[in-house]
Length: 223
Image (tube, helix red, strand yellow):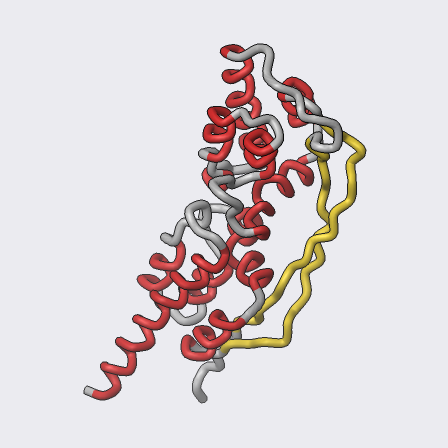
């Protein structure tokens, strides 16, 4: 009897925000609050920023606020260059955020203040994950699903998974490698940089490499 392939079950996450009651009106206050705010809040304002898509050149809420509300363009650029996915944990990411802000404050000790109503408000997420009723038993079914699933599913399986699993591994490539036994394709999926693309961009790149694999498989069958 042929071995049954373990199907990939697509899931999706949605985030409900809760206020921490903490806010900053200038860089010094932002720096002090980043040093003590919960890991969940740091996670939301950095990793979960990708759920929003790339807004202008920003890659996290801190850079967005510094650029738009404080108009501190040099610091905004430095903060946007922080790739959260290269850090093993939130503590390391927090330390890097603080280092970048501290370096800036050493050179510009009197930065601007945000006007009333444009302070930085720290939030923390309540993330709910649930199956969306779509399963893929082979690469062709997987390809069709990836093309049409909601962006929240792409985020959960590609972005959030890298934090959950560690080691730059996502749910898609893990299934492709362990279940379908396609290591080369898994490596191609893992090589797609989450920091450099929007969710739509990630979807397009995954579709591209998987379509090529399916096409090669069809050519082998024809021969």
